[in-house]
Amino acid sequence: MDISWIKFVLVSLAIFRITRLIVFDQITAFIRAPFLMEFEETNNLGEKESYLVPREGGLRGWIGNLISCYWCTGIWTSVAVVFFQWKFPVIMDPIILIFGLAGMAAIIETIVQNLLPD
Image (tube, rainbow, N blue to C red; front, side, top):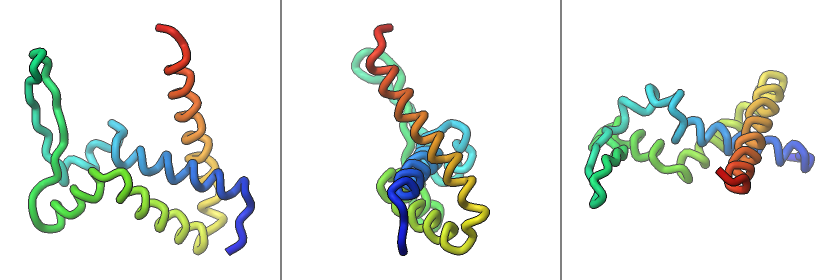
């Protein structure tokens, strides 16, 4: 497969953004809900902390483990993006561009938030 450097960067950024969308973003919490359980604990400072734990056993537990692991989800996202780009490039090109730009925007926003004083 021959790929230009700009396409490689765009696909990489798109995979980064799609993976974060699946694993972390609030907008996709409804997708994660059947596979993860939320627990709340109070820390030593008296603050409530919540965390997600994969459900136990079966397909829901397996998917819960998959989507709670950023690295695992990233690999499967990569497989899906490359496969669909190979089979349906006309459809995937704008999707990759949109998610690639969104990924770059997320990286820039993180940098700006960490550089600017409050």
